[in-house]
Length: 431
Ligand SMILES: Nc1ncnc2c1ncn2[C@@H]1O[C@H](COP(=O)(O)OP(=O)(O)O)[C@@H](O)[C@H]1O
Ligand SMILES: [Mg+2]
Image (tube, rainbow, N blue to C red):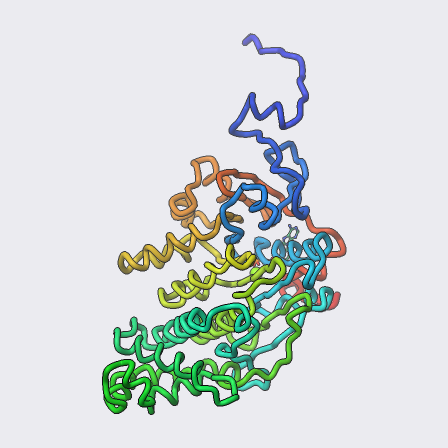
């Protein structure tokens, strides 16, 4: 008979046991932040997280996070409960947290109702319109030149997506000149994308001088941009972004949800609508304010082409400067990696998007995604195996240099916030 090793049972806290078995047991990440669930590698202790607290403690260098996972594994449920619990711990409004959610599936309405978030429902040809070129609260806090750059960036991302190519230097300069001209001319009314298209068709003498061309030459040079904008305004963005805003908004409230469920999730229009929506939100975010969470659910839609991916990257940059934490959701590692396929500039975008988020929360990945996940998130071999086998609600968290395996727990009262299975199972939404 084989002799077995018999040693007395030793029970210790993770603070001590991690020194005996450091790769499987770790100390807890602390009790700052909101409760998430069970820390499975720290003796099933409580796991807490908050991007701003993590930043304040020096665990991470920026407050942005990516949440990845196959559909149905609990990405949106995690975000909804995080916002709900943050509101309970930190409060909302000027002295607490401010939430902005871009919601392509229209599934944040219960959360919005509970937290009194303004819901702005945008749909093609609908009656609600927001204007991404409106000055917004940032106008009082930022030099006009910075806003011009941001708004011109948004216009070029939209146009490049429609044209399926980058803008030529003269097209780019003409677009910038048109946006700048609109900001400078004080007609009293707020500039809109329609005005940009109009100026590109009939450039002013000022624009022509700036571009060292005649007005007629500028109109010819920028004709593709003007057509692309016209196409956008009459199709993808019709009725949503083509005029002054129709929604009065309280900046000092708890926040807002942009419900984009009127735009089909798989349509070509969705990334364009998301870029315009993110452009509008930037005018709210680019100024001092409370700690703000900007959620881009289904952000993979922006990763499908490099122009919108690059725009997403620039939108995420605001984080540290203004106290905005971006939470972006995608399905799989290859959503982010796909950008690397067609040249070095796009590879940089993919790398930059990941580098700009100090926290990644990886839910279950399909077997064919595991090697991409390992490469892009720097997973160890055991981590890669675990990621392929995670149950719903369970995720590998990378917070700066630390890892944790966490089971997200839902409280009974949170079920109405998170239940996206109701329709699949034939239950009524209210049930
Ligand atoms: N931690 C969890 N425990 C129990 N059920 C969960 C958990 N996370 C999510 N769910 C349920 O799983 C379903 C799918 O979740 P959802 O967040 O919509 O997935 P995803 O956004 O990844 O597609 C929802 O009905 C939700 O209530
Ligand atoms: Mg979801």
